Length: 431
Image (cartoon, rainbow, N blue to C red):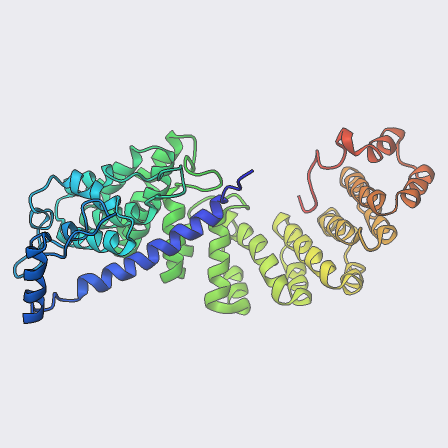
């Protein structure tokens, strides 16, 4: 069975393609057209005598319309759409361009057209001529980069008009288009982009049942796109805007902000930023996101930081994440740290995280920690998880322990019958 690229891999690919294309576009527009030399005139004369298109090179077999069709408009004077297309209808010219298999010809033609376009209606016509989905869905022949580039040019001319067009499109077109428009708008006029995203953009999200409506696993929420873009160039401003929003702790926007905090300011700077924040979903969400990132760099230090946080759900989650990461690297050291944790509900997540992490290497030790969890529901869930892992590794030993345990008979049966469900139906470690 053919594997389908994941939405994340697809998004990364689109981002790299669009970035490269825009960089090329900027360079292309900023370089003046070189003067025509005697050799150029000679080559043009030969081309015309051999049946080539006036003003370009001869048509090449196997390329619909040939290269010459897309080399129009050379010479002195301002480049216009009519001059570039030689009077041909724009939609027809654009479809021929997109049918080119030569990437250089196709991209060069698009760059010249974007340079010439001044009317948003022409951009709308260009978008209509693009088969965004390609010949086989999101695969061969898909024109993500071209679609995004046209919308970026439209945003430079009239951002509200561009986002209005995108909002009227279907799922995929809206997802890609909203990202292109809001990222460009944030770069060119962040103040206006923020205001629109927090007012009109938010109203549209709510009318459609909340942020989303795009590719599975992604969001078309304008404010999220604005914050992601803004964090790269003005992190303080992005955090200030984010403080006025409400986030789910699993938000990818929070992950982006946490990544930028560490990348731009380092671990100490990120911790200082957290210390200066007011209580709220942004601070709590960032604490959870940063805990795992801190643990990747220095697990003992991350655990000590998490333990020093004010009591509450954010601290409990952060500590559990760091303990789980530490247990993977050094279970003995993590266990020694755990000994000093108080027997409180706030520390229960950490005990569950530790127990389920070390279960494969030390099931008996893991069970000892699982039974110290104060919340009975969480304790039972942790014990079931550890024993299930043990059954897969050493069924006779695990079943002997189950038979001698004080677990209810229904739990004993469930643990030994994986096909019936059991652990996994409830919350997992760290919840």
